[in-house]
Amino acid sequence: MDPFALPPLAAVLDAAATLLVGTADVLRPLAGTASGALAVVVATLLVRALLLPAGVAQAKAEQARARIAPRLKAIADRHRRDPQRLQRETARAYAEERVSPLAGILPMLAQAPVIGVLSAVFLHPVVAGRPNGLLEEQLAGVSLGANALSAGAEGAIVFAVLVGLLALIAEITRRAFRPPASLEGPAILRQVGLLVHTTALIAPFLPLAAGIYLLTTMSWTLGQRALLRRRYPLP
Figure 1 (tube, rainbow, N blue to C red):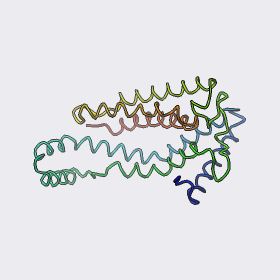
Figure 2: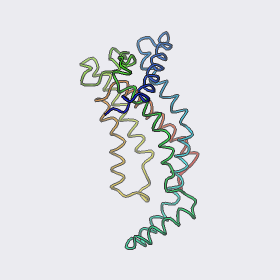
Figure 3: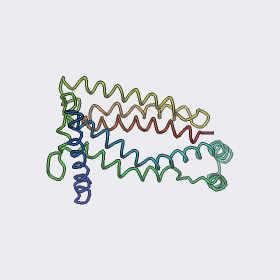
Figure 4: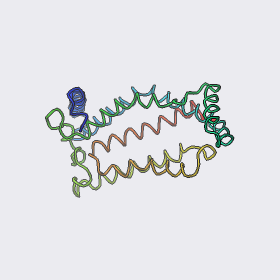
């Protein structure tokens, strides 16, 4: 069952879609037929800017986890055959270092509802019983509601550029922010490397509007993490 079919969530989705269509109308004199795509970019940037405090909290939590990681690894090596002692010593380490085991999780949960609603607008061709006007907009002659399979030959170039940019940003992110080898095992490093490229792999199967959103939010995330890593460097 689609949760956005429930009346309260459907109303929220309708309001978000209406706001995006209104933004596209405002931008039309400036962007012409690309106003819908620009509205997606503007809305994504505004949402990510509003969620910046959560990003700062995540950066602080990442710094704290990296600081305590060597101590936790030493505890795990020392007490791996005594699960109860391991649990006690781990809890003591978190308490002494004044780090919460849940550090970073709450900021992620705080972002989820807002990002979820924004993403849902790009994935629902029908909102509140009406066609989603945003997905009827176009970029370079391709409907924002089309994916690579339905866009035809004219959409091949658009999706090729989109996927290429997503893959490029994913690779830069992987190289710049992969966990230090001293803190993470090689298997985890490989998994992280594959995970960041998943977005580029699934983008052709999503509506073009969702792809533009992913490209915008990944670009923002890369820049945000670069700035916050300078402010909160890992030990």
